[in-house]
Every structure is written in C-alpha cells, then in structure tokens.
Image (cartoon, helix red, strand yellow):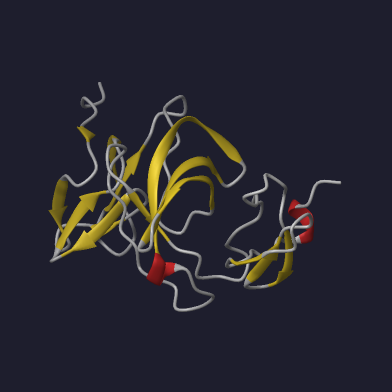
Length: 178
C-alpha cells in the first residue's frame, strides 16, 4: 500500500538542501527547499544519492503562472509608477480565472531580465517586459481606435496621429493570426 500523499502550499518549507535536490514546482532559499506550487509532494531517488523533491499539481487543477512564463495580460489601470494588469493566458492556455499582476515602470525595458519570485494565487505577480518579444501588442488611443506601432518604443493613433511611448512587443511570426 502506497503512503498517503502529502499536500503542500506555495511557500511551505519542504526540507533542507542537504537532504534533497530541488525539482519541479520548488525553489531554494537560505539552504532550504520550498514549494512554489499547491500540490502533492513527490520524492524520486536519483543516481547521485540525494532524492529529487518535486511538487506536482493535479491535471484538472487551475494553471498558475510560473517564473519565466510568458503571459498575456489586460491593463486595468495605470499610474506614474506602475500598471495593474489581469493575467488572462499563460503561454497559449487561457486561465479559468484571472490573476492580478503589476508591471513596475522600472521593469519596462528591453534587457536586464529580472529574477522574479512569484507568490500564490492571492498575491500580485510581478511582471517584466525584459525581452524583445514582450511588451504591448494591442493598444487603443483616447479616440478609441486601435493604435499602430511605428517603432519599438512608440505607437500612433491613425485617426488623430498622436504618438504614445509604449514598449512595443516584437511578435514572432508563428504567433500572428491571419
């Protein structure tokens, strides 16, 4: 008979790095392995002696954004320091419910990718546009018209010809719909 599954939540300390190696769904901090997902704890033996500790989710459960994931968001509000967004897709998979995210002004750039740690479903996800492929894909002007990108950092309203500074995404051809 298999031992009962141990469930864990994001941020829960699982064990010391001396006892195991961090696998999927985990991260290390201050000499300990922590869960980055809500799910079942799984230990696998490896050849090097230390078991690999992973946290796996049920296939039916809610998909969560992970560190390094590309997400599609809708901007809800903007102020001088940051933009608040709702995360709608992780990769090409639509989410069952939206998650809140924040893009700080200093994280809107083309390089210097950050190491970002994520919290659980109740917290804000800190997002960055630190790659050429990341940034604004669709925007509306104050006149309500879809804006047109004119450079990697500007979009223009075709009706009023006003220009707005935006970090424009370089969308890869395989993601364009015709």
